[in-house]
Length: 462
Image 1 (cartoon, rainbow, N blue to C red):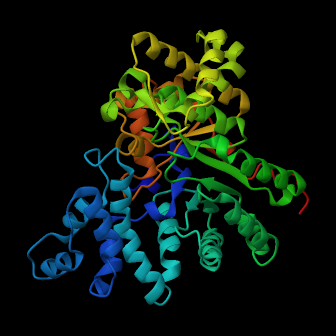
Image 2 (image 1 turned 120 degrees about the vertical axis):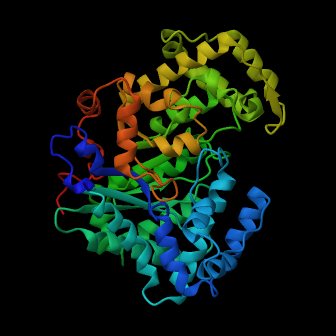
């Protein structure tokens, strides 16, 4: 039985038909890679994959040899590609390894785009068709242009994706597009996008509903993007017919800071006006389990992070204390003064004990309550979190904590190709691991379409 033939009585059918967190580049299967590369494998420049894989894994693969040996019947090409492309728990949590495997796809598609007639349209076309065939009826696709020094390429890339999304909307299938902005320099990219949408890209505005902040989050605190997000909100207020809502990946991979700071980042992103928050593992993973990962790295954070955490605690003192968090104001003010003259990059070491773990749990509760009050939505992606986010076990997955709270929540696949897990499997995974029945889970989640982008434009005369 195919997904589209599934019984209409499935209480989670609506959630398997509405994909709100997925990246175009993560939609391609092992079969796609083989099909796209086979005619050209001797001509493809594999260096970005080979170099990244060597750096991340200490091995230098030879894709040309794979295809040659497969043609001679000496190896199973599908299994070889799968081993070097599909990201599993054994690979993570390591974004460099994820990127190395992802670069296999990038190498193939770079050749498609540059040298194969019609190759530029092949990526978004396949991503959209995969969703249609899987029974998804509404999807918001995101994509990130890797270069930050190529304005023409940036606009060309996003125009092609938006056009593919527009052209795919038919027969009850609806899609929208969300360009990703580079965290390191979002301003110029945003200005370029806004200017284009107001001019040559105006006809595509109905299909471009937001902007996304994704990829590596470590080193890019939400507070550093505050001015950028404020500009976006200001532009939305000035021209609501062209409003771009904000999607923000946060609390996914955060080994560069304390657990308290990771929780704070999630709250800050919502407070800055992000409509939906990607992952937020830091809000739901039990701190005792989180702290054991990667050599206890959460015990160390920079002086800058500690200062910001102190400022946060003092600013939110009443709410934190109401949630049972201890906020010794005088001691924190003294510590802040002591840190004022220290180099912000110096690492501080603050070990955890059970008391501190319990305090982090209460901070998680407070942050979830605040995000619920603000009205931001958490996007939980189970397979991605288990593998890339280093969630230790299904029972510890943050989605269970989210379900127990009142926060608005949607389930997404993130990268269904590289994780080999489409949306329907992600939703079933949650249903099979939570204590709720499928019907009760569906009732807890509500209609996923209520969280789609576009609400800022609703009711605006066009």
